Length: 599
Image: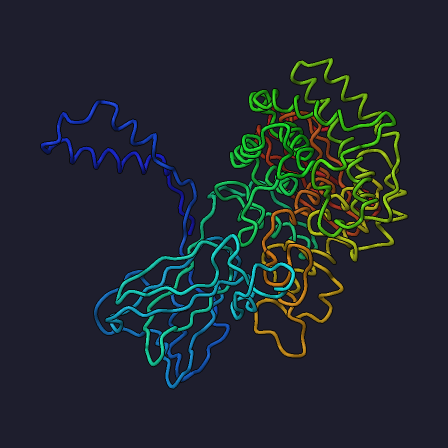
């Protein structure tokens, strides 16, 4: 069940009700007329919905005799403790045992849990709670922050996922604020018993409709599109987060695939400009966003793409002063030959798998700067700055003439193709196709797919989507992961059960850089690239003018027989359907909102 409340009105109603009580008391006249307005102005409005979810299955119990009636927790329940005889789950510790169970809520969520006890609990009892994105994580101990020397260890970094609490006697408690699918409950007191009536997950999310959609005759691709959309939906919390367990942070570069997914699935949403402004306000020039020059470049690129999709010139105008100063700053880091010269002024970074490849990073930064100046030039033209526009266009053209060696890097090669520095067909044939999904990354996989599309290699791109993102689904993913390596996953067990001794524990035993072992996030918005890609290149929906006023429909079905879907525009929802005929030609049906020109 979806719960959608007007939080602003709810808070106002409560404030007015409380003040009405004061008004009939001896306090009349003690407060100035603006007191109510000041109270509301100081209130923090929570725009997130909450729903209570029942566990879907019991993954594991420590002992049938010491954990009794666990199946009662799978019933819907009432959500209320009460006196009287009732069937409850009893967890008992005897003779040094530590008894418990693991619950599966069926799908990754952001939030916490509500635990309701029964009349049998006349005193408080301590339990240990371990939230997990995998079953393995619920069975682990916190042994560090996941950095070198603590590989495999779970962490309370960013969000608490392993802690003890006291449960009330026949009452309820709500606790937790993290990303999880699984919950382990262990009784933490010796020679004791706790009686639990219900356990509910509390999911917090933005209650917004999925306006975009994608369907085709390949159910795997359908699930991949939906999983990418859901991954980003969970990350749309107070701000647009990178992940909902670890990395509940705002990273400018990581946001770009999320912004494209939001535009494709939900249309305009306030979380994007709010987060872009957060980055700007906390990064006064001459600093770079997140201390990374490329991330300030991504900020300009996102301003461009957000404007193209939504046409909000008033918002764009608010960025003018900062953006012009930022572009001017970057212009000072291009040498006479047109090469980027950002060494020594920040963390030179594309993504983590390429972090040690200095040649690839140079090539990638050359491409990103070129793209930034190209898009920045367009925005300057929109903002009535013709001289600035011409300046940055010439800079982009100058930089495009420099062709650095991508060093066989999928990341660098893809960006060089997207920037128009290298021929996309050469990049595909020399780098992307030979490397295949073995060199894909969750973040930059989006740009690898785009580069393959520019090369006209839609079929291999589709195959890569199936293998890479489908590989996560094969291991039980319900959201896409911060990092994934298909070769490491060859002998891995699914994440939704206890890992057999003969199988690899993927979540615990693999990973690198900042996502070692269980520290790795299994819900990371930057991994959602296939969702906007499938809509743009398979459905063929290409936005040409700001606010989607002009859209080109050019489908590329590859080995698909048919595909259909919807796409949100500021003027309404666009619908397209493509059916491949026996002669190979595609029959297309389009229903466009009034005001949207279709080419």
